[in-house]
Image 1 (cartoon, rainbow, N blue to C red):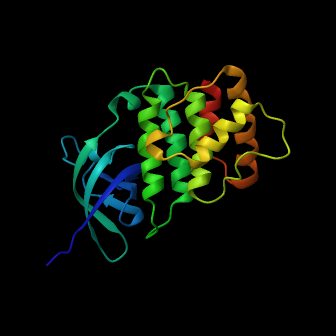
Image 2: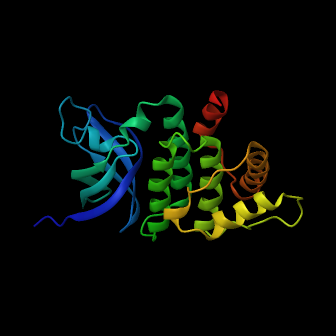
Length: 216
């Protein structure tokens, strides 16, 4: 009898495989990062077509073959359709997904990272939240979740507001992470700090970031 894995997760990326299949990377609560193949997902009308789009969040039914997982079914709770139809917003999301892919590992406990992805995509859809601020918060919190965020820097003169914001990002719960805004001046301070941290800790080039820079 075929044993199935039921995993709560989000599709970080997808790519064509063969003539009609898709290869998907799913960040899951139960099993960390999973790479799976969705047979026939690129056929028109296939039940897995929408479920294998980037950012699809829900419960995925998988079984493990000799070399990889196969996606058998999915119950999607949030497709983030509004974000996918927003060119700039989609690239912010793709950048976040690249960072999540960079950090996550198979069989790791990635509940915090998955929660961060979900809350951050929701934040990108809130008009009152400046997307550059959402990006800074995501970058710093991703480092914090993975134990690399150094907090408020000691070698840089920051305003009290910027220092407070950085401290808040590091210690806040995911549910309360995107509950503040800052002035343009403070945002510039936060961007400078985050940029320095990214250069120091991330030895990786994110493709979507280059496109995002050309849009903003």
